[in-house]
Length: 380
Ligand SMILES: Cc1cc2nc3c(=O)[nH]c(=O)nc-3n(C[C@H](O)[C@H](O)[C@H](O)COP(=O)(O)OP(=O)(O)OC[C@H]3O[C@@H](n4cnc5c(N)ncnc54)[C@H](O)[C@@H]3O)c2cc1C
Image (cartoon, rainbow, N blue to C red; front, side, top):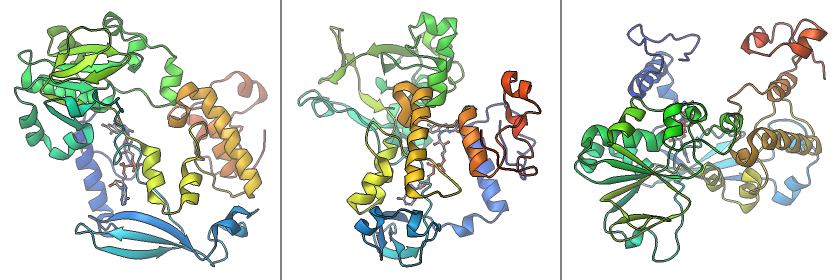
């Protein structure tokens, strides 16, 4: 369990994995304690942002970041943000600098596409995405699934949580069927006997799964529910819809369903792209399918050096995450990322006490304690 260094968890929370309600209450208490809420304008949405004052061609020709190597540029340009309230009234806000913290896992659902006549349109039941399920709130969502044959598509956090809720509500009388892509995996499927039994052994390394954040903690009693039959699993390489439910490739009979819930994730990059009005920024922001998006750099270099840096990041993201490189995260301690971060912060990336320790000892969080107290730039 993590906590803010200046705001401990209440003593009542002792669980290693607090529930989402406990986490939400903790974050809420933090925000209230430090007066964060009064700085937020709730119920408003940025529906577009544009850069004014400098043409795109001029920007594309810049050799230095912002034309002069300064984060805020020459002052000739500014961002204009269109901000809509709940009634759709739009105001324009101006800013020199915008930090996008709009999240990857919300907003734009990632729903598979189907050939004509094989998608949700031919199904007699209800089809929703996990995002809509979450928006309903607990009691309405429970009412919707009560006594229904629910099929959940996907096998990551949202899908597992929803299937668990279905199992709690409907038990074995109306089992919840999880249909999952044949190559999905959970962290523990690498090692655990129950998951081997249920055919969950993945086709790639745990390291790739960690680096691309495609792992999650199995909900409590997940295997018990599989054993008792309140959750059923079906693997698919392709699946489609029919009148009665979901047709899994290679199976003669459909998975009869009243409700199908897609726990298939979100299109985080689309969401970032949609923030920008101009095509130029849309393309800059998300790159192409085969490239990565730059993460961050504190000390700004000239544009050519930054582009080189981005390609270097990309090389490591592809090495660590394989085909999932566009999901690359810094969740695990990849020494290369940490070295890069140290350099950006003007700190020495060599954290050990001697040459042999550098060569043979494992790096851990303790090596980065008091990072700023002895900062000295030293490349290696
Ligand atoms: C089911 C589920 C379980 C997860 N479990 C974990 C977990 O256990 N541990 C973990 O570390 N992570 C988990 N995650 C990932 C989690 O999303 C992130 O860790 C965390 O929420 C990211 O925080 P964030 O501030 O970047 O984005 P978010 O929490 O998504 O916050 C983004 C904010 O931006 C706002 N916003 C978006 N677009 C606009 C716009 N156009 N205008 C104005 N505001 C906008 C949103 O309303 C939201 O308030 C989980 C995600 C899901 C979906």
